[in-house]
Length: 321
Image (cartoon, rainbow, N blue to C red):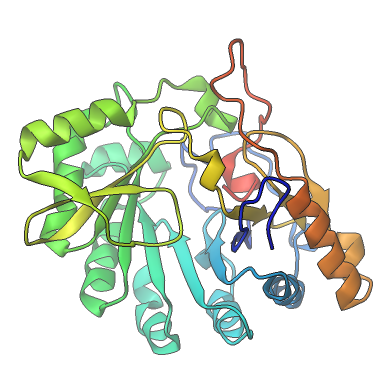
């Protein structure tokens, strides 16, 4: 269906847990309050929401968290969602720490894509960023995913004074494995308020200096707003997702379902529509609740407004980012 501004909403990010089992500085810093299993949606409820969403024309689902694979039975849910009439694509975002255990099963069920979060190639820095993660595990998962034939992407957030010096090494993974590597401008949401982000305009300038043959790639890479670049006939592409310096709200096609059953029309604002009560009703009532949530989607975010301090204080892992 379309929202009040004529945008076709066909993509839903589904957070199945807000847990990472890593104290990541990007999503799970010390002091983050975890919710109990009793507070999050069951798999049956998530599947039912996805069926209702499909009835409204949402055809693409992203399974995320937190870290989705810390929740037992995650692959069974993915398989069930893949079988819903009207759902054309199901992908997953992961930190890759345990992905190697599920690659074969994901390939067997026909997963449409895997996004792996990776912000550094330095083992010590990786442990520092994630709290207790092991870089070798994520790199092993990345290699397995890339070699499996599953569409694989790397998501990276650059931070001043942290990993900006690794730009070329991280970008080079695209050409090493023939995959997409995307650099995402950090939004001033949750812990992102405390750090100075890097403009993708500056990132692109540096990339072109390093690889003068870098040229725009007009082919379709997925459902999101990334702008891609490639190098002649070399496999792999570099994507830039620029919510701050390249506002793409006019083309935004997504809503988000949090693990606790709230629909978030936009990451910028703290507006949420609780659909848990609708889950106790009929399918028509659930579909109507989703429809109202889509119609609550704002025309644009306000990150660039003068004096903006951030309407949302919770972490990305808690709001289905």
